[in-house]
Length: 384
Image: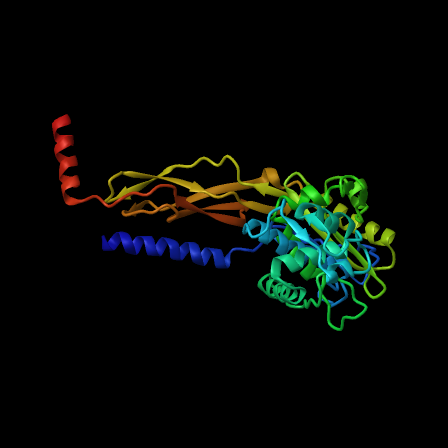
């Protein structure tokens, strides 16, 4: 028994050391020279969070309505928590109805469903709709802004501070963020798959078809694979966008801040996305054959195993070069619980590790009792 535990400890120690010493290689970042219009930019893989290109990505700038990505994230998290429903009808406050800028001209005490308010924010960037949602989620705009800043810190958005839910910046002093932080909150919002049902709409209506909405993100109409996400512009911010697109398994986020015009913003975002799709792809660990692991001292002699889906960003054209190797414990000691780690799958290209994933027990196995053990011996003896 002591030998088994010692051997198991040595095995996982070796795996741990290997994980520290192997290259973090998954892709070769090409750092291209791209002629982009804007003060800052970034290209991020939404699956892994890998940064594929950046230009002044930590510079703190005004985000304009790209702010609403965080507003929408908190609203979708409230929907997921079941504290807000798409068919809930919300009453508009005097404060929300007084919002300027992009709007759907809500009236005080007007009642509108959450889904229509969401569409108005996502498609038409409506400030009055954004504030109506925020007030109902948190009780007040101030409380919602506090939640925005808290969530930003949780996501590692260390250079971000929000002062309102809309991005209007005439009266703000420190409503600032960065291209990198925008990419981080965009990636988090895209984890809510329903968001793209709205961000990919080109035109829609509310108020029983009486009020039309047209997407402020023109890429929705013209860029293949576009999934969103949000535009913004003010005199302080210039023209900004967080543009996301997916082709196959590769999902990219391109952020442009401080462009000189909406056309320049769109052209620059397109260049970033085109670069990403031309140079990278995602490997998914489908169809890897699994074995069983021998169990010591259990009511069963072998435990079934499983592994989670693994997505690895690689340079385009390398998918066929990937090799996978299973490193399994020779045996494990009962009791065993679902999720107990029993090995790893190591993925390589030309003998260089590009990633690994845990292999775990997919069933519980109890430790065998003395009487169960004796019963098995007698049963086996009688069957001979």
